[in-house]
Image (cartoon, rainbow over all chains, first blue to last red; front, side, top):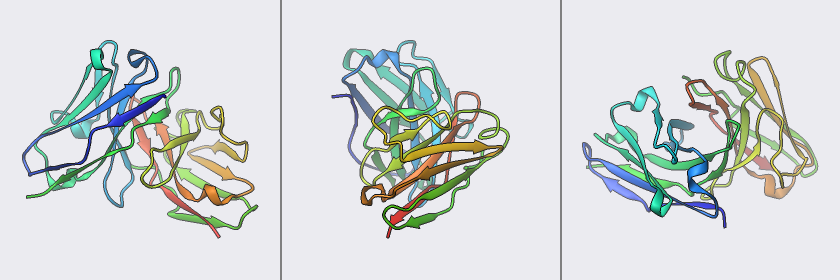
Length: 119
Length: 110
């Protein structure tokens, strides 16, 4: 079954880091870019950046530069998004999404991971 | 980049049509033919229903259609069905391999 399965909910303190995983199955992991998108409660979706699982190349949104790191482990078909120096405004549902080949849209999404930042 | 503007809600009776707008700028919606639309039932993964302004992925009913004029894209759901009740959001390529998303519209089937 073609799917992206994300890690479970996280509760972190301000200033800490969080690492969310996104395991791909049912397709060739290295053939599709993985994007990370987040949605704060009551807010719209926000693009954080992308990673090419084949090369490891990444591109981050300006807002997240210096705080986000996207990596992968191709041996277990898993992508990771680590966000550091967490603040309350980072409380959101984080999604990984597979980019369509040859286009700019997402044809496969993870189920979302709730990250709560609270002291 | 600012979020794309969508109406917060839309509604229609079964069998009717509903159209949702998605307004951006010349740097996103108006600048690229890479507008996509997603259906999102809370608690589930979003599903792409339109990509590249008006293309439907395999398996998406032709009741869903998309268009674009200038900086505004639109999604029309014809022949509304109960299962169409969901949140819908648009997205546009915004350059530098990043995306801009809409504010989201909750569609209610009356």
